[in-house]
Image (cartoon, rainbow, N blue to C red; front, side, top):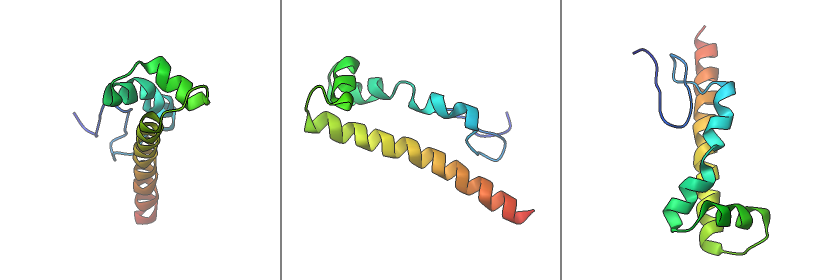
Length: 86
């Protein structure tokens, strides 16, 4: 199958993240963080909203957000490089 695909969203044949896949990148973020730290996704949600405090959860959530944006930025960088080659 041509192109690059992973569980974080759709990519086109150049491996660039498609704009419509951005919601897919964040969908399940609380679940992934909860699995990493061993709690319920609703607790991660409460920490994210400031209703609860947990440095462990907050740090894991920040790392997941950064990882997600790295995927987006990597796709944007590839698109810019491809545009320059044209």
